[in-house]
Image (cartoon, rainbow, N blue to C red):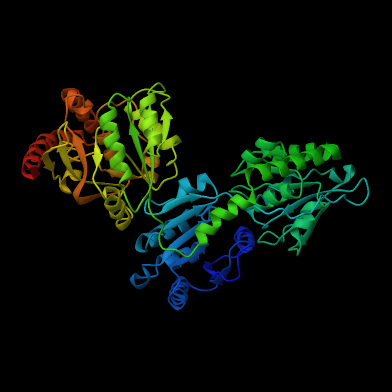
Length: 582
């Protein structure tokens, strides 16, 4: 429980009901909240004006929004309030079945400012709606232990199924009415429908009772024999979690968290969404199950909830999201792939990473399992070591991003075991990406150094280098470059079939999902020596880069044939003009 001395977090919410209302109730147990509701009756311009007024009056450095209208109102808050950090919660798909509303929302979002952080209650929701300019957080729902034991129903033969939720199509309400077995009463079963909604006027079959909204939903769930959740779309529905919390089994559709919960614990039955015959069959199985089996399934759900969704862990994460702080330090994951054969160079590489400041840095060294010296160097430097499970540099980088400590970082990069980052490199690169929320990656200038670390020359590619990538030479230095992790996920990671031009291939695909940012300062040093993969394989590297470029010419091959020689010549001129001797 939070101290009363804490300043309440400012929360702007719209469409306050269902999951949003329950989230705020649970969050209020751990974080002091000041909730300002933007009524649905207000037009969007008035919601924007009210949001601006609330932010200006309270001077809060952080605002947390729930609901699409509240999120848009803060996105459109204007330049005077651009310093306010915006944490945006997504509880479900607000545009399910409404592509027109989604198109309107995306158009308005492009006019406004991206949030600092987006919080999603399920990974699929993040994959659908995460933006490149925001820190992505996946925080599944959790519920506290209500301390209510299952309640034995009155009379040995009286048994009841419960539906708790909005009476609407997407909640599967019509499917449930159609699937409810006609002979349920013969087996002593009834269905109680708890909630309101647009379909409340529908006729219901015999044995089904509409009770409307109720004051104590947890007590009703505890007194049920089975809880039915036939939704078409969900993330982590509170009704399922709270059914588990009171030890009741569920019948649910294969959406959101339900497969992980039911398959992972055996706490009920799963059916495909919108499959009425399958739902009817599951209802019959539950009705025919002995009471002891239902109780056992309910207890399995309770055990799963305590094991997989402890409320203390959830509360710790949510406190940080609601905390009054400025934008969090950028989280950066850098993978260092190595064979462990150049310990002197690797030591300097790791030292250059350790010297980075003003970022939350997570370094993962990936090397063969028998590279014991590299493992010791990594752990001695305070970094993570992973034994490589595949072959090649490309696979090692992907493994480090996927499995390493920085798998949930905001930005991803990699650094060769013989290259260096300059002091402040990551600070400058992350600042550039945060200043340009739609940019997919950033690059800068690069020193070329010899084996002793002496500067041979400085490559100053300039922003034009990014535009030449598809048609001409690759003048974008990989050392010092940094990508948005979300953008890398979107384009499909590094191509592990490539040995030399994996960076060019990734840059080209990243360009397709967002613009390129450029920092006019030296971000890294590339060590030019005979043992370097790039130096030793220059001809093979050039051939692979040419093939990578040309495979992106789909539908533009004739244009590429014309532009390639011109771009190559322009690139050579640019490289010569912007190369400065050390």
